Image (cartoon, rainbow, N blue to C red; front, side):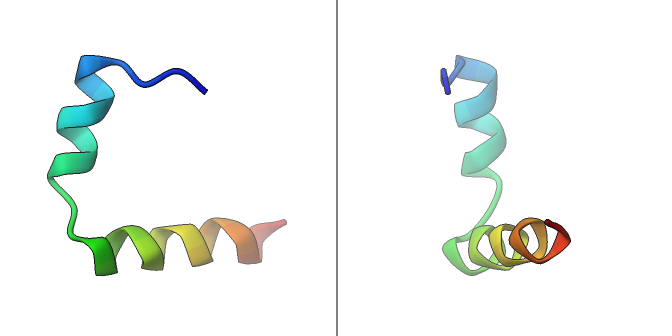
Length: 30
């Protein structure tokens, strides 16, 4: 997975807790 400058700024908008929550949501889908 390549990280673009746009991707980095996107991730910077989220806190660690929010990223963890999104990650768990994505995992529960599959």
